[in-house]
Amino acid sequence: MKKQDIRIVARVTQKEKERISDLAKRCGLSTTEYLRQRALGYEPKLTPPDALFHFCERLDVLIEQPFSAEVNAAALTLLKDISAELITPRKENMRKWQPQAFGPSEDG
Image (tube, rainbow, N blue to C red):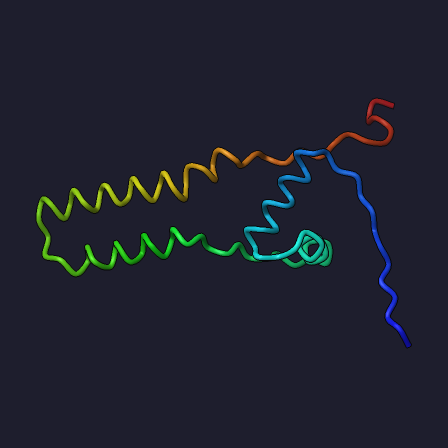
């Protein structure tokens, strides 16, 4: 017997579509698979960016060196680079999701 897939259609704004597509891409999934997993209660894990591995390698090199003012300065620079590349852009893109109003109002 042939498997018959059934399509579910949902309307979203352009910004919502871009956000969903971005999240799916960051998880290494197609938009369809990302939405399927979320709808079924799964929380796909984000795939770490290549920059994370680059920063880990740089950190390993610093850890192996004896402590000095130069190593301390390099570590601070590395932390600033990590923040600029991996943390700050995510914070700027995060917004608290707000449900959209629909249905009758609570006022009556």
